[in-house]
Image 1 (cartoon, one colour):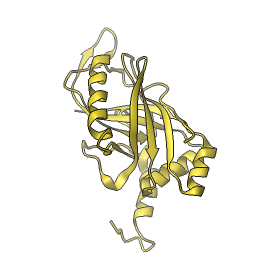
Image 2 (cartoon, helix red, strand yellow):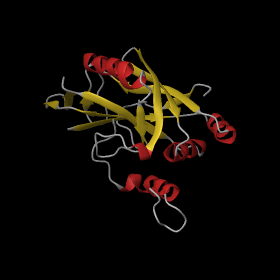
Image 3 (cartoon, helix red, strand yellow):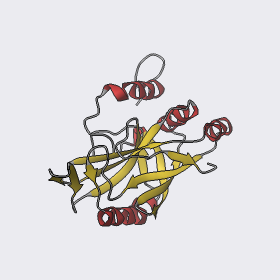
Length: 203
C-alpha cells in the first residue's frame, strides 16, 4: 500500500522573494520525518526501518542527484517529472528526527511553491513510500512494517507528522484520505502554467 507522512514546513519570505527576484535557487532546511512517534494518522515509523531507508536514499537518489519530489502527492509510486518542484540535497539525523536540505527548483511546480512561500502560505513536507502496516488496537496506532520502501518527499497542503515545518538556511507522508478539493487550486495553477492562453494543453 502507498504510505504518506506529512509535516508542516515554514520558510523565510524575504529569502524566497530574493530568490524569485534574483532568479537564484532557494534552499530550505528542516524536519522531514520523525521516528518512533505517533503521527496524525496514528502511524508509527520504527527508527531502524527509517534509518535503513534514509541510508539507502542518501546512497542512491541523493548521491546520484535524482532525489526529486512533487508539488502535491499523486496516487502513484512513480515520480512525475512534469510536477517535480524540488530535490533533496542532504539528509541527516537529529535525535529521532530526519532532517534535510531541499533545493526548490525553477520548474513550473517549483515556481508555484516559491510563490506560495512568498505569500506566507504554510505547506508541508510529506514522505511517500510503499509498505504494509500492523495495527495495535490497544494503543490506537499502526506500525510500519519491515517491507517499507521510501520513495521520496513531496510538498503538500495538510500534514500528518507534527512539526514538519521547514526553515530557510540562508537559503508522503500526508494525512490519509485527504479530500480532493484541498488540491484543486494548486492543480489548476499548475495546469494554467503548463497550458497556453488558448486553453490548449502544451504538454
